[in-house]
Length: 263
Figure (spheres, rainbow, N blue to C red):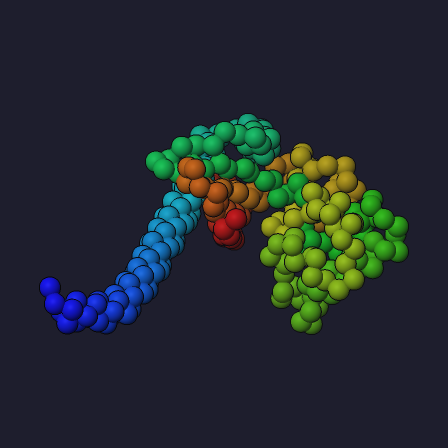
């Protein structure tokens, strides 16, 4: 081979070397970009799957909770229709809260529900209780002057609007928003209070604390019941809670309030 050809090939090789370097850099950048796109796609897929799973769990939990309300309501209504003796009826109604405490959950397809029954008539009705009765209950947990101040603040919150209960409390949690409310007293008094009553106190199940502050009409059985149903999908932490407040009629329960929340 002539010296000229050797020099020509060496020059061509030197000219191709930068081109190969540029191509390698471009390939590496393309790999990085494709890797980033792939990671983004995988992340988006995981997020979509997570959102879909949460949406399904929310639907399952909600309908499981509603099924718990309906099943419990049907069982109570059937029992009330079958019980014609007043004493047996009173015994049945007065035992509902205790019987439902700590009950097992019920399997329903992919969901579960558990129901608790609260005798609202065994608590002091915050929305209806006069200042002196509220103060008498709060005085079990603090001095009389502070108890009276808290009771007056609660009545002022409820009766804003010309002395009429035009803004009743919908939950005991709303008591915490009252300016100057004593959180310690409210926490201790909470088991004896309700916002779901009708002003009637069930002396068959009310505690001594409630009876000491009772006002108005006394009854021998609950006039208001709260059905608290929680539903969830198996192996998922999301829980849906429904609280149905019912008036007790002669042979059935009549809906008064309905509350829902996701926990």
